[in-house]
Length: 241
Image 1: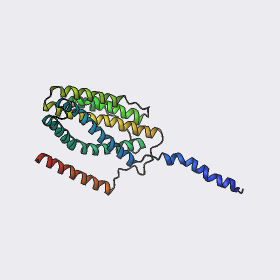
Image 2: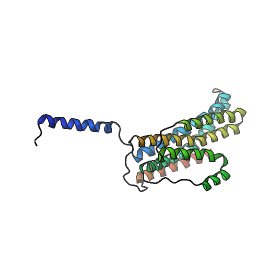
Image 3: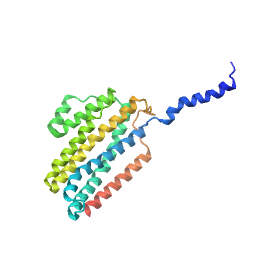
Image 4: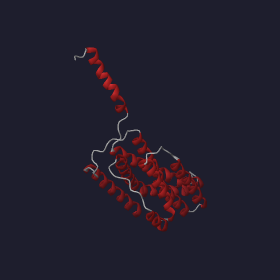
C-alpha cells in the first residue's frame, strides 16, 4: 500500500512528537545518580557546618576580631576535614542507590542481631541508622510515595543541638556543635538522595543499567587519586601550620 506525500510528511512530525518528552526529560543514568550524591552530600555538609557555627558567630559578633576569627578558623578547618570525604561517600551512596533501584543488586534485610550489636556499641547512632534503613526500604524497595518528614526532622534536630551546644560559649562547645552538625548532615543528605532517586524510578526516568557489574573508568580512578592527594596535602599543611 502506497503512502501519500501528506501522510509521509505527517509521520516524521508524529515521531518527533512522541520523542519530544524523552528529549526534554532525559533519563537519569548511573553517572547522574553518582553526581547527585556528591552534590547533595557536599551541600548538606557545608550547610550543616555553617548552621552549627552560626550561634558561635552570632554570640562573638561578626565584627569582633578575635571571637569571630576563632570561630571562622574552626569552621574552615571543619570544612577542609569533613567535606572531601563526604563528597566521596556521597558518590558511593548515589552509585549504590542507582544499582539498587535499577535492579543490579538485591535488597538485603538487616537482621535483629545486627541492630542489637549497633545498640550495644553505637547507642546514639542506632536510631538514625534504623530510620535511614526504614526510609530506604520504603522508598527504594517497596516503592511507596515520597515523604520529606525525615529530612525535616534531621534539620530541626540539627538546629536544636547547634543552639544547645553553643549556648555555653566555650570553644569545646562550638567544636562539639560542628561535629554533631557534620554527623547529622550524613543522614540528612542520605534521606534527600533516597527521595530523589526513588522519585526518578517511580516516574520512569531512571535509565536501564548498561551492565550489572561494578565498573569504573580510568578517569574516575585518576580523579579519585588526585583528589585524595590534594586533600591529604591540605591536611598536612593545616596541621603543620
